[in-house]
Figure 1 (cartoon, chains in turn red, green):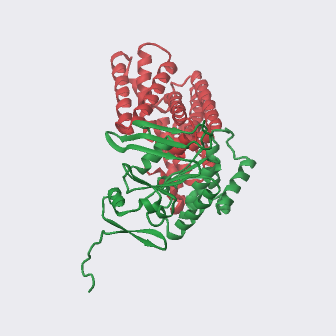
Figure 2 (tube, rainbow over the protein chains, first blue to last red; figure 1 turned 135 degrees about the horizontal axis):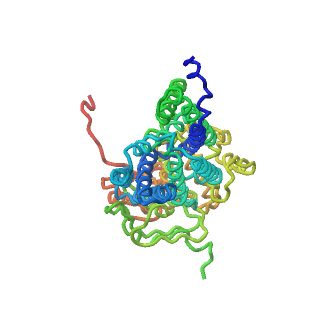
Figure 3 (cartoon, rainbow over the protein chains, first blue to last red; figure 1 turned 60 degrees about the vertical axis):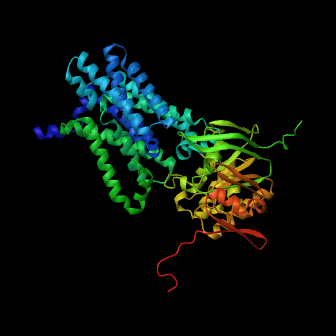
Length: 285
Length: 259
């Protein structure tokens, strides 16, 4: 009897929190997959990692001074993103070091604030590893808005994004506002992290930006195809991962990312040597 | 009053560029007129690429000024080595990129496709349009980026080491292609370290090592004094078939030689 109940795949859909979490995770998976294409082709995976830590600092700070999470953490994330872009461009110190300084300091500040003013260590765990229980209806609106915005940016800015990603110098010579395009992209990644963080958590979010896009990269040599294969991989793995996590009683974010990693390994195995060479340009990951 | 067609396209005055604190380009004065074909020669690390990037506006200038004629369209061909050949794009997509300022529509339109075909046909690689850039030969790769630069109908074509890493036949093809484009009225500026294969054929040479050492016709410029000052190594200039031929003296004796 127990086994039948446990295998009932529709059982979790009876819970409001699960339905909310599932919607947020699926849209977030598609969005991360879409922006992940730029993250992997630009070698920005470390920026994704860093920004999620920076947003954590913003989340903690906005909780302490009691302002809206999306407003506080969002502003914080965007400012850190722009700061990283600015410091990295100056080339006085390397981009990786710049990111290291800005984001770990922000993360440490967040931790210290939560220790000092937070209610319990439980909420820290929720922020670090994500929690389906914490997802509210407002999160669905937020992720939908950012999802549509991300789609609009990629569709309307397709040519400029492709040009600056492939050949920054020549794009600049061709009068494309390279810095503006990069700032918009960083802001979009910050916003994505912001609205995804409550489900996936700070620590594992960068995997969602990297793995689906890297898997998709092995299947195609076309940039435009990559832009829809990667979001599909991201969305499907988030959807299935959420369901699995309920039945296996594992953390949602861990299950999603393990599923993504499994997809990567399978594609890698099936791709053969020739297709694997497509990964060569991702050597800096 | 100067006519727009008579005024120089590019004027560099006392231009210096630094990388960190190290000066890479020092006090350069260079004027490029319409319909000129200019080659900048110098050893690796002499700052040729930096000067080129400063001219196209991709490298900040520390001192001095670079004046570019207003509304000048520059077609830039980067060094083939700097291109990420694994990037997921087709030849057609690479060429249409230069239109990203004027159109937001993500898909390549029919008109653009026809225009791409025209440029590719002109450069003799019409069948490559839908191939991935990785699947091209060295000569084709160079032509694709030349095609991209030509696609925006530039006033001046700027090429960084167009013959680096290509075989003799490809080098000849590229040289002929550039000569044809020049005879059609295009202004061309390029860098090279290939003295005999490329530089000696050009109408105007600038010998460069952080600063300009000599500027003029290859016959005037290619002398052993100038080359020694440029390359820091002894060199001799002979004449072969009416062209200057540079021979370097860097002879190394190998073990067991002549046995």
